Image (tube, rainbow, N blue to C red):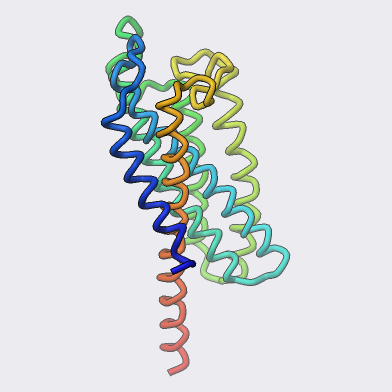
Length: 231
């Protein structure tokens, strides 16, 4: 039971975040109004994506040191789940922008506007999707693992300026382009902080849970392949 505590915690945190996110009061701000509740879902998706991509590069570096293919498998699984959360983050962000960006802007009422934040996020997603395509194009296990590990390191190095730096250096309708961070606790009232941070932790724990399941599936599949080759 002790080793499952973090999974139980994930379920409890997400249940609280969903219920509290829809039912607890939020500040009535102009433009965003009730849509500010999307903060409990949109921003945690990006937090989760970053955590997963960082964990993946940790295992890629570990593989380059140990040449253990299991570390390469871990890195691949973390990237795969990270890409899923990046897509969820993009979808929730596009929906939010559709309803909240100013009506007098040329970018109003469009899911995709070409905003710098959207472009940089999409580029980051494509870089990691290319990582998965690259892996599928190399048959040799060791060669695939080494090339993927090096690529993953460069991908992670590009992720931070694309997500956190470049969008703040150019004009954008996205919050944070002026140098402020909308997810900063100082910019949230007490009730929103009470829901936001449990949501972040809950989604991260859920993503790690999903990744562990994906790792187990891949390990089982590899064992079956090895067994069939021997037989």
